[in-house]
Image 1 (cartoon, helix red, strand yellow):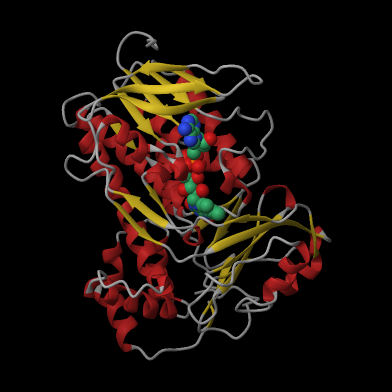
Image 2: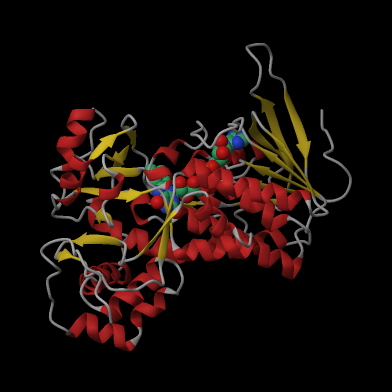
Length: 468
Ligand SMILES: Cc1cc2nc3c(=O)[nH]c(=O)nc-3n(C[C@H](O)[C@H](O)[C@H](O)COP(=O)(O)OP(=O)(O)OC[C@H]3O[C@@H](n4cnc5c(N)ncnc54)[C@H](O)[C@@H]3O)c2cc1C
Protein backbone atom coordinates (compact mmCIF):
# COMPACT_ATOMS: atom_id res chain seq x y z
CA UNK A 1 0.00 0.00 0.00
CA UNK A 2 1.33 3.44 -0.91
CA UNK A 3 2.18 5.92 1.84
CA UNK A 4 2.49 9.66 1.48
CA UNK A 5 5.57 11.31 2.96
CA UNK A 6 3.58 14.54 3.54
CA UNK A 7 1.95 17.16 1.34
CA UNK A 8 3.60 19.09 -1.50
CA UNK A 9 6.46 18.10 -3.75
CA UNK A 10 8.39 15.07 -2.53
CA UNK A 11 11.70 13.43 -3.30
CA UNK A 12 13.20 10.12 -2.21
CA UNK A 13 16.95 9.64 -2.08
CA UNK A 14 18.08 5.99 -2.22
CA UNK A 15 21.27 5.66 -0.16
CA UNK A 16 22.32 7.93 2.69
CA UNK A 17 26.05 7.83 1.92
CA UNK A 18 28.09 10.75 0.63
CA UNK A 19 26.27 11.30 -2.67
CA UNK A 20 22.88 10.77 -0.99
CA UNK A 21 23.60 13.39 1.65
CA UNK A 22 24.86 15.83 -0.96
CA UNK A 23 21.72 15.15 -3.01
CA UNK A 24 19.68 16.24 0.02
CA UNK A 25 21.64 19.49 0.07
CA UNK A 26 21.13 20.03 -3.67
CA UNK A 27 17.38 19.36 -3.42
CA UNK A 28 16.81 21.44 -0.29
CA UNK A 29 14.51 24.34 -1.10
CA UNK A 30 13.33 22.75 -4.37
CA UNK A 31 10.96 20.20 -2.82
CA UNK A 32 8.84 20.26 0.31
CA UNK A 33 9.92 16.91 1.71
CA UNK A 34 12.84 14.53 1.20
CA UNK A 35 12.96 10.94 2.46
CA UNK A 36 16.38 9.31 2.56
CA UNK A 37 16.27 5.52 2.45
CA UNK A 38 19.45 4.01 3.94
CA UNK A 39 19.91 0.28 4.36
CA UNK A 40 22.36 0.65 7.27
CA UNK A 41 21.71 1.99 10.72
CA UNK A 42 24.20 4.83 11.23
CA UNK A 43 26.64 4.00 14.02
CA UNK A 44 26.68 6.29 17.07
CA UNK A 45 30.47 6.60 16.76
CA UNK A 46 32.48 7.56 13.67
CA UNK A 47 33.19 3.94 12.75
CA UNK A 48 33.01 1.65 9.74
CA UNK A 49 29.60 0.46 8.52
CA UNK A 50 28.85 -2.35 6.11
CA UNK A 51 27.02 -0.28 3.47
CA UNK A 52 30.26 1.51 2.50
CA UNK A 53 32.71 -1.40 2.23
CA UNK A 54 35.40 0.75 0.61
CA UNK A 55 35.51 2.91 3.76
CA UNK A 56 38.38 0.89 5.23
CA UNK A 57 40.65 2.05 2.44
CA UNK A 58 42.67 5.19 1.92
CA UNK A 59 40.50 8.10 0.72
CA UNK A 60 41.71 11.59 -0.16
CA UNK A 61 39.41 14.41 -1.19
CA UNK A 62 40.98 16.39 -4.03
CA UNK A 63 40.92 20.18 -4.10
CA UNK A 64 38.19 20.22 -6.78
CA UNK A 65 35.98 18.11 -4.53
CA UNK A 66 36.73 20.30 -1.53
CA UNK A 67 35.65 23.39 -3.44
CA UNK A 68 32.41 21.73 -4.54
CA UNK A 69 31.74 20.48 -1.01
CA UNK A 70 32.28 23.91 0.48
CA UNK A 71 30.10 25.51 -2.16
CA UNK A 72 27.29 23.12 -1.31
CA UNK A 73 27.83 23.23 2.44
CA UNK A 74 30.04 26.18 3.41
CA UNK A 75 32.53 25.45 6.19
CA UNK A 76 32.66 21.68 5.69
CA UNK A 77 36.36 21.51 4.80
CA UNK A 78 37.16 23.47 7.98
CA UNK A 79 34.91 21.12 9.97
CA UNK A 80 36.75 18.12 8.54
CA UNK A 81 40.09 19.67 9.43
CA UNK A 82 38.78 20.29 12.93
CA UNK A 83 37.79 16.62 13.09
CA UNK A 84 41.43 15.74 12.41
CA UNK A 85 41.62 15.51 8.60
CA UNK A 86 45.16 16.17 7.37
CA UNK A 87 45.63 18.65 4.56
CA UNK A 88 48.46 17.54 2.27
CA UNK A 89 49.49 19.97 -0.45
CA UNK A 90 50.61 18.21 -3.59
CA UNK A 91 53.55 17.85 -4.19
CA UNK A 92 54.77 19.73 -1.10
CA UNK A 93 53.42 17.30 1.53
CA UNK A 94 52.47 14.33 -0.66
CA UNK A 95 55.13 13.12 -3.07
CA UNK A 96 54.78 10.62 -5.86
CA UNK A 97 57.26 8.19 -7.36
CA UNK A 98 56.80 8.18 -11.13
CA UNK A 99 58.22 5.64 -13.60
CA UNK A 100 61.15 8.01 -14.20
CA UNK A 101 61.93 8.88 -10.57
CA UNK A 102 60.58 10.93 -7.65
CA UNK A 103 58.57 14.04 -8.22
CA UNK A 104 60.30 17.27 -7.18
CA UNK A 105 58.84 18.77 -4.02
CA UNK A 106 57.77 22.18 -5.33
CA UNK A 107 56.29 24.58 -2.80
CA UNK A 108 52.89 24.56 -4.53
CA UNK A 109 50.02 24.87 -2.06
CA UNK A 110 47.13 25.28 -4.49
CA UNK A 111 46.07 21.67 -4.31
CA UNK A 112 45.75 20.35 -0.79
CA UNK A 113 44.40 16.81 -0.65
CA UNK A 114 42.29 16.17 2.44
CA UNK A 115 43.27 12.87 4.02
CA UNK A 116 40.80 11.43 6.52
CA UNK A 117 39.14 8.09 7.12
CA UNK A 118 35.76 7.63 5.44
CA UNK A 119 33.80 7.07 8.67
CA UNK A 120 34.90 10.52 9.89
CA UNK A 121 34.32 12.19 6.53
CA UNK A 122 30.87 10.67 6.11
CA UNK A 123 29.81 11.46 9.69
CA UNK A 124 30.93 15.10 9.49
CA UNK A 125 29.19 15.64 6.14
CA UNK A 126 26.00 13.85 7.28
CA UNK A 127 25.79 15.82 10.51
CA UNK A 128 26.16 19.13 8.64
CA UNK A 129 23.69 18.15 5.90
CA UNK A 130 21.02 17.12 8.40
CA UNK A 131 21.60 20.19 10.59
CA UNK A 132 21.27 22.53 7.58
CA UNK A 133 18.15 20.63 6.48
CA UNK A 134 16.57 20.98 9.92
CA UNK A 135 16.92 24.74 9.61
CA UNK A 136 15.41 24.84 6.09
CA UNK A 137 11.76 24.77 5.01
CA UNK A 138 12.29 21.32 3.43
CA UNK A 139 11.32 18.42 5.74
CA UNK A 140 13.99 15.71 5.69
CA UNK A 141 13.41 12.26 7.13
CA UNK A 142 16.00 9.47 7.13
CA UNK A 143 14.68 5.91 7.15
CA UNK A 144 17.63 3.96 8.53
CA UNK A 145 17.85 0.17 8.28
CA UNK A 146 15.57 0.40 5.25
CA UNK A 147 16.46 -0.96 1.86
CA UNK A 148 15.17 0.20 -1.50
CA UNK A 149 14.15 -2.87 -3.50
CA UNK A 150 12.61 -1.38 -6.61
CA UNK A 151 11.07 1.58 -8.40
CA UNK A 152 7.36 2.15 -8.95
CA UNK A 153 5.80 3.63 -12.07
CA UNK A 154 6.28 2.61 -15.65
CA UNK A 155 8.83 2.83 -18.43
CA UNK A 156 7.99 6.50 -18.96
CA UNK A 157 7.82 7.83 -15.41
CA UNK A 158 9.04 6.81 -11.95
CA UNK A 159 6.43 7.52 -9.29
CA UNK A 160 8.17 6.22 -6.17
CA UNK A 161 10.34 3.60 -4.51
CA UNK A 162 9.54 0.21 -3.00
CA UNK A 163 11.30 -0.29 0.33
CA UNK A 164 11.69 -3.01 2.96
CA UNK A 165 12.79 -2.68 6.57
CA UNK A 166 15.98 -4.47 7.62
CA UNK A 167 15.52 -3.99 11.34
CA UNK A 168 14.41 -6.61 13.87
CA UNK A 169 15.27 -10.27 14.10
CA UNK A 170 13.76 -12.66 11.56
CA UNK A 171 10.02 -12.36 10.86
CA UNK A 172 8.27 -11.10 7.77
CA UNK A 173 9.55 -7.85 6.31
CA UNK A 174 6.78 -6.61 4.11
CA UNK A 175 7.54 -4.27 1.27
CA UNK A 176 5.85 -0.90 1.11
CA UNK A 177 5.67 1.77 -1.57
CA UNK A 178 6.78 5.33 -0.97
CA UNK A 179 5.40 7.64 -3.66
CA UNK A 180 7.49 10.61 -4.75
CA UNK A 181 7.66 13.20 -7.50
CA UNK A 182 11.39 12.59 -7.81
CA UNK A 183 13.55 9.55 -6.95
CA UNK A 184 17.35 9.86 -6.81
CA UNK A 185 19.53 6.75 -6.91
CA UNK A 186 22.61 7.43 -4.75
CA UNK A 187 23.12 3.82 -3.68
CA UNK A 188 26.75 3.60 -4.79
CA UNK A 189 28.66 0.91 -6.68
CA UNK A 190 26.08 -1.76 -5.84
CA UNK A 191 23.20 0.18 -7.42
CA UNK A 192 20.46 -2.10 -8.76
CA UNK A 193 18.96 0.43 -11.13
CA UNK A 194 19.64 -1.69 -14.26
CA UNK A 195 17.59 -4.55 -12.73
CA UNK A 196 14.91 -2.13 -11.54
CA UNK A 197 14.69 -0.73 -15.06
CA UNK A 198 13.90 -4.22 -16.36
CA UNK A 199 10.99 -4.49 -13.90
CA UNK A 200 9.66 -1.17 -15.25
CA UNK A 201 9.87 -2.54 -18.79
CA UNK A 202 12.85 -0.40 -19.75
CA UNK A 203 16.11 -1.43 -21.33
CA UNK A 204 19.17 -1.20 -19.06
CA UNK A 205 21.17 1.99 -19.63
CA UNK A 206 24.20 1.69 -21.89
CA UNK A 207 27.26 0.88 -19.82
CA UNK A 208 30.94 1.60 -20.51
CA UNK A 209 33.66 -0.21 -18.58
CA UNK A 210 37.43 0.03 -18.46
CA UNK A 211 38.89 -2.36 -15.91
CA UNK A 212 42.59 -2.28 -15.03
CA UNK A 213 42.03 -5.28 -12.74
CA UNK A 214 43.55 -3.39 -9.81
CA UNK A 215 42.97 -4.65 -6.26
CA UNK A 216 43.61 -2.90 -2.93
CA UNK A 217 44.72 -4.11 0.50
CA UNK A 218 44.83 -1.63 3.37
CA UNK A 219 46.09 -1.56 6.95
CA UNK A 220 46.21 1.23 9.53
CA UNK A 221 49.50 2.05 11.25
CA UNK A 222 50.68 4.30 14.05
CA UNK A 223 54.21 5.73 14.15
CA UNK A 224 55.99 4.18 17.18
CA UNK A 225 57.43 7.59 18.06
CA UNK A 226 54.91 10.33 17.16
CA UNK A 227 57.73 12.89 17.22
CA UNK A 228 59.44 10.93 14.44
CA UNK A 229 56.34 10.74 12.22
CA UNK A 230 57.31 10.90 8.51
CA UNK A 231 57.19 14.43 7.19
CA UNK A 232 55.39 13.61 3.96
CA UNK A 233 52.69 11.34 2.60
CA UNK A 234 53.97 9.02 -0.11
CA UNK A 235 52.44 7.63 -3.27
CA UNK A 236 54.16 4.94 -5.34
CA UNK A 237 51.51 4.06 -7.92
CA UNK A 238 51.68 1.13 -10.31
CA UNK A 239 52.93 1.72 -13.81
CA UNK A 240 52.91 -0.74 -16.70
CA UNK A 241 56.44 -2.03 -16.06
CA UNK A 242 55.85 -2.19 -12.30
CA UNK A 243 52.30 -3.40 -11.64
CA UNK A 244 52.45 -3.05 -7.82
CA UNK A 245 51.96 0.15 -5.85
CA UNK A 246 51.69 1.62 -2.36
CA UNK A 247 50.38 4.80 -0.76
CA UNK A 248 51.06 5.80 2.84
CA UNK A 249 49.32 8.86 4.23
CA UNK A 250 48.46 10.34 7.63
CA UNK A 251 44.83 10.49 8.75
CA UNK A 252 43.13 11.80 11.89
CA UNK A 253 44.14 10.62 15.36
CA UNK A 254 47.87 10.25 14.66
CA UNK A 255 47.30 7.17 12.46
CA UNK A 256 48.51 6.43 8.95
CA UNK A 257 46.85 4.35 6.27
CA UNK A 258 48.88 2.08 4.04
CA UNK A 259 47.13 0.94 0.88
CA UNK A 260 48.91 -1.57 -1.34
CA UNK A 261 47.65 -2.11 -4.85
CA UNK A 262 48.36 -4.37 -7.77
CA UNK A 263 46.92 -5.12 -11.18
CA UNK A 264 45.91 -8.57 -12.45
CA UNK A 265 48.36 -11.25 -11.35
CA UNK A 266 49.78 -8.90 -8.68
CA UNK A 267 46.91 -8.48 -6.24
CA UNK A 268 48.15 -7.50 -2.77
CA UNK A 269 47.65 -10.20 -0.11
CA UNK A 270 45.49 -9.80 2.99
CA UNK A 271 47.69 -12.17 5.01
CA UNK A 272 49.62 -9.93 7.45
CA UNK A 273 53.11 -11.31 6.86
CA UNK A 274 52.66 -11.42 3.09
CA UNK A 275 51.26 -7.88 3.16
CA UNK A 276 54.51 -6.54 4.61
CA UNK A 277 56.56 -8.59 2.15
CA UNK A 278 54.49 -7.20 -0.75
CA UNK A 279 55.21 -3.62 0.38
CA UNK A 280 58.90 -4.29 -0.36
CA UNK A 281 58.14 -5.23 -3.97
CA UNK A 282 56.53 -1.98 -5.19
CA UNK A 283 58.33 0.52 -7.45
CA UNK A 284 60.47 1.96 -4.62
CA UNK A 285 61.49 0.64 -1.16
CA UNK A 286 60.78 3.95 0.65
CA UNK A 287 57.32 3.04 1.99
CA UNK A 288 58.60 -0.32 3.22
CA UNK A 289 61.44 1.48 5.03
CA UNK A 290 58.98 3.84 6.74
CA UNK A 291 57.04 0.88 8.16
CA UNK A 292 60.02 0.00 10.36
CA UNK A 293 59.02 3.02 12.49
CA UNK A 294 55.32 2.14 12.78
CA UNK A 295 53.04 -0.37 14.51
CA UNK A 296 50.02 -1.90 12.76
CA UNK A 297 46.76 -1.02 14.56
CA UNK A 298 44.22 -2.80 12.34
CA UNK A 299 43.86 -6.02 10.36
CA UNK A 300 44.49 -5.98 6.60
CA UNK A 301 41.37 -5.46 4.47
CA UNK A 302 41.10 -6.19 0.75
CA UNK A 303 38.99 -4.69 -2.05
CA UNK A 304 38.73 -5.96 -5.62
CA UNK A 305 36.04 -4.18 -7.62
CA UNK A 306 37.89 -1.10 -8.88
CA UNK A 307 36.50 -0.97 -12.41
CA UNK A 308 35.84 2.37 -14.12
CA UNK A 309 32.14 1.99 -15.01
CA UNK A 310 29.78 4.60 -16.35
CA UNK A 311 26.09 4.16 -17.07
CA UNK A 312 24.81 6.57 -19.66
CA UNK A 313 21.63 7.81 -17.99
CA UNK A 314 22.09 11.19 -19.64
CA UNK A 315 21.56 9.80 -23.17
CA UNK A 316 18.29 10.94 -24.77
CA UNK A 317 15.48 8.74 -23.45
CA UNK A 318 17.81 6.77 -21.15
CA UNK A 319 16.04 7.72 -17.92
CA UNK A 320 12.35 7.93 -17.12
CA UNK A 321 10.90 11.24 -15.96
CA UNK A 322 11.16 11.77 -12.21
CA UNK A 323 14.38 9.78 -11.81
CA UNK A 324 18.03 10.78 -11.38
CA UNK A 325 21.27 8.94 -10.65
CA UNK A 326 24.18 10.44 -8.72
CA UNK A 327 27.59 9.44 -7.35
CA UNK A 328 28.98 5.94 -7.82
CA UNK A 329 25.58 4.67 -8.96
CA UNK A 330 26.16 6.83 -12.04
CA UNK A 331 29.91 6.53 -12.51
CA UNK A 332 32.66 4.70 -10.63
CA UNK A 333 36.39 5.22 -11.03
CA UNK A 334 39.54 3.28 -10.42
CA UNK A 335 40.11 4.55 -6.85
CA UNK A 336 43.82 4.97 -7.36
CA UNK A 337 43.11 8.39 -8.93
CA UNK A 338 41.17 9.58 -5.86
CA UNK A 339 38.28 11.08 -7.82
CA UNK A 340 35.00 9.41 -6.82
CA UNK A 341 34.03 11.56 -3.83
CA UNK A 342 35.00 14.73 -5.69
CA UNK A 343 32.87 13.72 -8.66
CA UNK A 344 29.95 12.99 -6.31
CA UNK A 345 30.30 16.53 -4.90
CA UNK A 346 30.69 18.12 -8.35
CA UNK A 347 27.62 16.18 -9.55
CA UNK A 348 25.55 17.35 -6.59
CA UNK A 349 26.65 20.92 -7.26
CA UNK A 350 25.66 20.58 -10.91
CA UNK A 351 22.30 19.20 -9.78
CA UNK A 352 21.73 22.10 -7.40
CA UNK A 353 22.59 24.67 -10.06
CA UNK A 354 20.37 23.04 -12.69
CA UNK A 355 17.44 22.92 -10.29
CA UNK A 356 18.00 26.57 -9.42
CA UNK A 357 17.56 27.36 -13.13
CA UNK A 358 14.60 25.13 -13.93
CA UNK A 359 13.04 23.66 -10.77
CA UNK A 360 12.88 19.86 -10.36
CA UNK A 361 9.41 19.06 -11.49
CA UNK A 362 8.97 20.70 -14.87
CA UNK A 363 8.85 18.35 -17.87
CA UNK A 364 12.37 17.50 -18.98
CA UNK A 365 13.93 18.88 -15.79
CA UNK A 366 15.35 15.58 -14.57
CA UNK A 367 16.87 14.82 -17.98
CA UNK A 368 18.52 18.25 -17.94
CA UNK A 369 19.83 17.67 -14.42
CA UNK A 370 21.13 14.21 -15.38
CA UNK A 371 23.05 15.71 -18.30
CA UNK A 372 24.62 18.25 -15.94
CA UNK A 373 25.59 15.49 -13.47
CA UNK A 374 27.19 13.47 -16.26
CA UNK A 375 29.05 16.50 -17.63
CA UNK A 376 30.50 17.03 -14.16
CA UNK A 377 31.90 13.47 -14.24
CA UNK A 378 33.33 13.69 -17.77
CA UNK A 379 36.85 15.10 -17.11
CA UNK A 380 37.54 12.56 -14.35
CA UNK A 381 36.17 9.76 -16.52
CA UNK A 382 38.40 10.70 -19.48
CA UNK A 383 41.46 10.96 -17.23
CA UNK A 384 40.82 7.61 -15.52
CA UNK A 385 40.11 5.57 -18.64
CA UNK A 386 43.00 7.21 -20.51
CA UNK A 387 45.39 6.27 -17.70
CA UNK A 388 43.97 2.74 -17.30
CA UNK A 389 43.82 1.71 -20.93
CA UNK A 390 47.41 0.38 -20.96
CA UNK A 391 46.46 -2.13 -18.22
CA UNK A 392 43.35 -3.54 -19.80
CA UNK A 393 45.33 -5.81 -22.11
CA UNK A 394 42.24 -6.31 -24.23
CA UNK A 395 43.67 -4.68 -27.37
CA UNK A 396 40.28 -3.01 -27.54
CA UNK A 397 39.74 -2.29 -31.21
CA UNK A 398 37.00 0.24 -30.38
CA UNK A 399 39.60 2.56 -28.83
CA UNK A 400 39.92 5.40 -31.27
CA UNK A 401 43.01 7.28 -32.37
CA UNK A 402 41.94 10.20 -30.15
CA UNK A 403 42.03 8.12 -26.98
CA UNK A 404 45.35 6.47 -27.95
CA UNK A 405 46.90 9.89 -28.55
CA UNK A 406 45.54 11.11 -25.22
CA UNK A 407 47.11 8.14 -23.41
CA UNK A 408 50.47 8.83 -25.11
CA UNK A 409 50.31 12.55 -24.34
CA UNK A 410 49.26 12.07 -20.71
CA UNK A 411 52.08 9.59 -20.12
CA UNK A 412 54.60 12.11 -21.47
CA UNK A 413 52.98 14.98 -19.62
CA UNK A 414 52.95 13.20 -16.26
CA UNK A 415 56.67 12.41 -16.62
CA UNK A 416 57.32 16.08 -17.38
CA UNK A 417 55.04 17.19 -14.52
CA UNK A 418 57.32 15.45 -12.02
CA UNK A 419 60.24 17.74 -12.82
CA UNK A 420 58.68 20.88 -14.30
CA UNK A 421 56.97 23.45 -12.09
CA UNK A 422 54.80 24.82 -14.94
CA UNK A 423 53.65 21.51 -16.41
CA UNK A 424 53.27 20.07 -12.91
CA UNK A 425 51.00 22.96 -11.92
CA UNK A 426 48.75 22.48 -14.95
CA UNK A 427 48.71 18.71 -14.43
CA UNK A 428 47.51 19.11 -10.84
CA UNK A 429 44.94 21.77 -11.84
CA UNK A 430 43.30 19.19 -14.10
CA UNK A 431 43.83 15.99 -12.10
CA UNK A 432 42.57 17.67 -8.93
CA UNK A 433 39.43 18.62 -10.93
CA UNK A 434 39.79 22.39 -10.64
CA UNK A 435 40.44 23.14 -14.33
CA UNK A 436 39.11 21.67 -17.58
CA UNK A 437 41.30 19.14 -19.45
CA UNK A 438 41.86 21.80 -22.14
CA UNK A 439 44.36 23.38 -19.71
CA UNK A 440 46.73 20.53 -20.61
CA UNK A 441 46.61 21.54 -24.26
CA UNK A 442 47.52 25.19 -23.64
CA UNK A 443 50.41 26.07 -26.00
CA UNK A 444 52.91 26.57 -23.17
CA UNK A 445 52.12 23.17 -21.67
CA UNK A 446 52.00 21.37 -24.99
CA UNK A 447 55.35 22.78 -26.14
CA UNK A 448 57.10 21.94 -22.87
CA UNK A 449 55.62 18.45 -22.87
CA UNK A 450 56.32 17.49 -26.46
CA UNK A 451 59.54 19.33 -27.26
CA UNK A 452 61.60 19.58 -24.08
CA UNK A 453 63.85 16.55 -23.68
CA UNK A 454 62.74 13.89 -21.22
CA UNK A 455 64.39 14.30 -17.83
CA UNK A 456 64.39 11.72 -15.05
CA UNK A 457 62.87 12.45 -11.66
CA UNK A 458 64.86 12.44 -8.42
CA UNK A 459 66.59 9.20 -7.38
CA UNK A 460 65.38 9.45 -3.74
CA UNK A 461 62.26 10.92 -2.11
CA UNK A 462 62.98 14.65 -1.71
CA UNK A 463 63.71 15.62 1.91
CA UNK A 464 63.45 19.39 1.40
CA UNK A 465 60.77 21.60 -0.13
CA UNK A 466 61.99 23.51 -3.23
CA UNK A 467 61.09 27.16 -2.79
CA UNK A 468 60.55 29.23 -5.95
C1 LIG B 1 38.95 1.08 -2.44
C2 LIG B 1 38.41 2.45 -2.79
C3 LIG B 1 39.14 3.59 -2.49
C4 LIG B 1 38.65 4.85 -2.85
N1 LIG B 1 39.42 5.97 -2.65
C5 LIG B 1 38.94 7.17 -3.01
C6 LIG B 1 39.71 8.35 -2.81
O1 LIG B 1 40.87 8.32 -2.36
N2 LIG B 1 39.15 9.54 -3.15
C7 LIG B 1 37.91 9.63 -3.66
O2 LIG B 1 37.44 10.74 -3.95
N3 LIG B 1 37.16 8.53 -3.89
C8 LIG B 1 37.64 7.32 -3.57
N4 LIG B 1 36.88 6.20 -3.78
C9 LIG B 1 35.53 6.37 -4.34
C10 LIG B 1 34.52 6.67 -3.23
O3 LIG B 1 34.54 5.66 -2.26
C11 LIG B 1 33.13 6.80 -3.87
O4 LIG B 1 33.21 7.57 -5.02
C12 LIG B 1 32.09 7.42 -2.94
O5 LIG B 1 31.92 6.65 -1.77
C13 LIG B 1 30.76 7.55 -3.68
O6 LIG B 1 29.74 7.91 -2.79
P1 LIG B 1 28.27 7.30 -2.97
O7 LIG B 1 27.46 7.97 -1.94
O8 LIG B 1 27.88 7.34 -4.39
O9 LIG B 1 28.42 5.76 -2.60
P2 LIG B 1 28.71 5.12 -1.17
O10 LIG B 1 29.62 6.00 -0.40
O11 LIG B 1 29.16 3.72 -1.44
O12 LIG B 1 27.31 5.11 -0.44
C14 LIG B 1 26.22 4.33 -0.89
C15 LIG B 1 25.16 4.31 0.21
O13 LIG B 1 23.98 3.70 -0.28
C16 LIG B 1 23.50 2.74 0.67
N5 LIG B 1 22.74 1.75 -0.09
C17 LIG B 1 23.20 0.90 -1.04
N6 LIG B 1 22.20 0.19 -1.58
C18 LIG B 1 21.06 0.60 -0.96
C19 LIG B 1 19.69 0.24 -1.09
N7 LIG B 1 19.28 -0.68 -1.98
N8 LIG B 1 18.78 0.84 -0.29
C20 LIG B 1 19.19 1.78 0.62
N9 LIG B 1 20.48 2.16 0.78
C21 LIG B 1 21.40 1.58 -0.01
C22 LIG B 1 24.76 2.21 1.33
O14 LIG B 1 24.49 1.63 2.60
C23 LIG B 1 25.58 3.51 1.44
O15 LIG B 1 25.25 4.24 2.59
C24 LIG B 1 37.38 4.95 -3.47
C25 LIG B 1 36.64 3.80 -3.77
C26 LIG B 1 37.15 2.56 -3.46
C27 LIG B 1 36.38 1.34 -3.86
